[in-house]
Amino acid sequence: MYRYILFDLDGTLTDSREGIFKSVRYSLEKLGRPCPSYETLLRFVGPPLQDSFECYCGMDQEEAWHAVEVFRERYETIGWAENKAADGIVELMSRLKERGCVLAIASSKPERSVVPIAEKFGFTPYLSAACGSEGKNEAKVDVIRSAFVRLGIGEAEKAETVMVGDRKFDVEGAAECGIPCIGVELFDFAPPGEMAASGALAVCKTVQELEEALLNGGVR
Image (cartoon, rainbow, N blue to C red; front, side, top):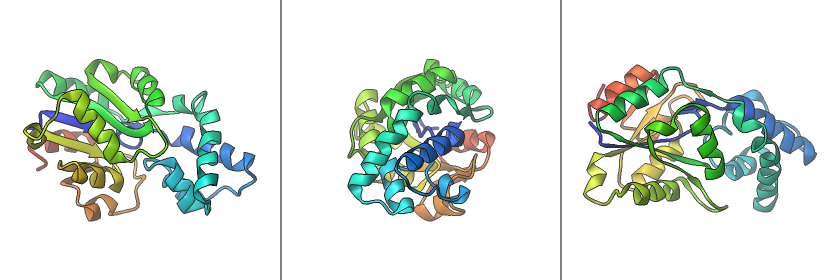
């Protein structure tokens, strides 16, 4: 069983597609850009927004950062609440904490959005930290390292630590920090097979499967 468990937020603990989709559309409309397909919008859930605007909307870095700023005009006032928790995830967090696990969120989303979302859905009582990005150039690895500092995770504790996420960015960031990642496909935001191809320790399609993997060191 892992002692320290870091959870991604969008696509892992919550289904945030409504708020993200509407805020992406809002941003693109204000910038006079066409809106991508539903399938492309799904790719916006999880990765850093600036990367998605560059990759899927053909923007350069400067325009992508402007698009992110416009996105946040809507998301940070309305969109963050257009969201719902995964069925059974709060109960799982409660059981894990009862077993002595130390839980935290490690999300690429700005921390000023992570905290109210955690409070809204009842995650906060089970968390020792709710970590998000603080600036423009932070990657997933930076957020994970921030969580390590807040939780007191050093080299000795890494053997007891795991990341839980739904995109390759979670797997890659965890690997760079020297810990494994258990993948989840609760909402199918990632392209098929992405988590396994990225090297996830296990890929879970239900909260029950995730609990089994966490309690058995990644083996279900």
